[in-house]
Length: 552
Image 1 (cartoon, rainbow, N blue to C red):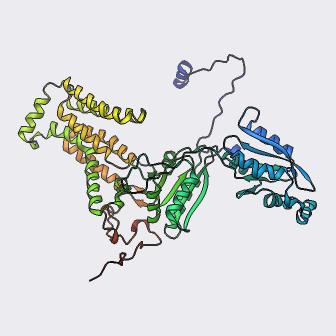
Image 2: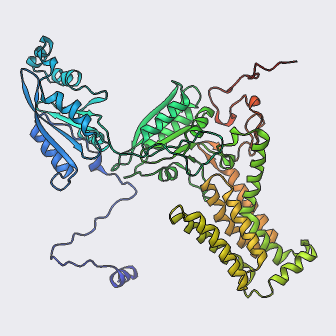
């Protein structure tokens, strides 16, 4: 017997067969060539209404699904009557719209049924004529489509539409009667600004596209819909400005999105991972924003936006390193103030990544660079601490991460208070108990606050993770270990690409054109779009944009 079989027989879980039925063997699945053929099979709509009804009852399990409603009735066309039924999901449709603009016109005699044209159409009995007559004359609804497959009909019904089936017709009518409850537009919760709009994306994709339309106010904004996920069939929207965005970037985005062989897509975070090139560093390569104004600014720069139905976030691509240190409010501030904040964020990034590692390297290997009085102060504060400095740092860093995570998980009114009070109480108690030294509390506090100063949560998380790597390098080899680690880290960043764009551009490789750098120039000098995006329109404003100024 093989060792693997012995372990499985000894420790493997064996399900109990209390009801004495035959347990089938698990089939071997070819995961490399996985293809859900059942979900890809397209069933056409039958011309017999009873066959359609039976098929729908089987697919939707109407006997046990209490929210799946099928309503049978007789369609009145004046000279003829047809058996018909509608299919919808209770709670996802507007009942008043369904009754007044779908059922009522179909069940009662319509004024169009009395004219000679309608009688001629019905008497001829051509299916295409009857279908067009129902769509054009009987249903006063702005959005109605004829579908020939159950897959398209079910997609509409699952999104909140109503499906109409009529006897003798091998097509179904997909009627927009959505009316489910949704969250109203509110203030951003994560990307808070002082100057600027106070509107955020919501979970409804159509509301989000409306926000983009309203901010852009331009007919060249293209919004292309596609579906991702064989089971969930999640609606996604690819948004770009036709006369600005690079065609190759748009094509690459469509290619990646349309070639995702997955069963489900439920959030923007999942799609971000599916579209991102794999890298060992785990750095983010796609911006995630909840602000429509920031998304529109990205569109005007030549980027592509992806919206996901059910997610209040937009994916902005491509994104380079300096984008994750940029705040949505930077363009609303004077350039000198915005650049000052950018410098603060750069310093915060280095603190969040390297400060604990530098502290342990200095105290263990390079004490000669510390002023004598400060060195004596550090040594005296550590005399009563029983742990090595590496254990001391790890205790406080992990404790701070626990407090941070707890503050995120508890209810929002308590969360910030828990984080502040927990850190103060824990730090004071740790010093009083001589578990850690007072200066280490200062180091950990500065490190933690520095990570909060980084605008992008994902990039902040990346720095927090690699902070522990540099702590280990500083403990093992001091400045040499940190220097080697930093060299490998920066070299790896320079080697990365995101949608064909170098991750560290415009500094590696160096690009000397205007408006490519990290620092902001005055708003009247921002004439060009970023050259690395290769946009169709390089200029975004005239050289003299403020014509009211007097030129000497």
